Image 1 (tube, rainbow, N blue to C red):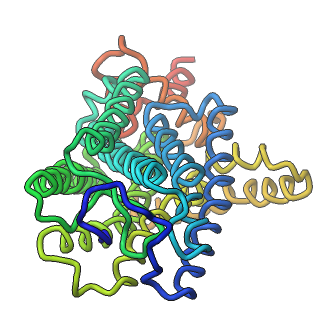
Image 2: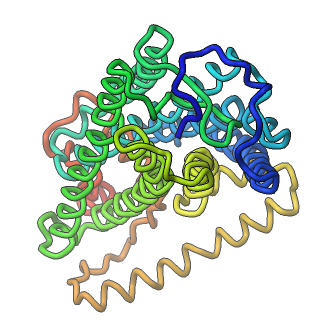
Length: 398
């Protein structure tokens, strides 16, 4: 993956391009697109969260951390590689190489650990609901701080002699050196493959397999009281959140796994037989993953989507999108009725004084309130999988 095996410094401006100009310009164009779209999209996502108080749930604390990492990757990590690609060689010297390599690696590691933390949050909330109230805002913030601290640690140690940063194959971006037989570099590479890639991936696999099995068990066997309207809606919300996060994890791993594989090959087998393009494309794809998360969240999360529309400056477009959004509950209601009939669920007896319909936003707010309350009893701690239909109970008593 790296062009040299000698220690820094080196005269970067004197290096001749090892990649066709058209390849450099293509990479530069892609990175420019990611820079513009990623900065705007992640910036708008962060503004949406900060302007919408009810979105700041413990789980969304991790999502905010992801958006911060993606925004920083796009705004700080891409410009130097982008400009160098258009010039077909590295422009920023030794200090710039160290800085660019550090920033990209730091934000990438932090996001990997954040995704790992999200998987454990989902595991506790869905597979261990009696313990879900322990995932408070404070716990979520401390977890995010730990993720960023670990990312910073692995990115900063090369400055202290444990490996170093060097040019990648196309000579227009930098990363930790992979192709080296130096025992110090090899030991670092082995360590980061284990602690930054393999262990987080295994943790995510364990968590999401258990979450999937739990949701399937609940849906098939009616483990909890699924005749409760709120319980059914909460299960649906947890399924949606699970799918959203699973897509985010899938996109991240899809983007970063090829880079990890090529880097592993270069570190322990050798990169001399790997074409420059094959080494360059995975590195570029890893950076491109930073633009995806806000779009995934807008498409899959109704609460976030409605809040996102409110910050759109164009009033006409905002009104049109909100009108489209308002039509969705009717369709989902029809689908919900069809689902209930197909499953032959027993409908609760009709009441003269019907309870007002509960919106998805209201239910999610109740879920977040219960998760964040340290003094709730064990019945309430069932979290999003099972909530008592409080409103129906109160009306029955009345």
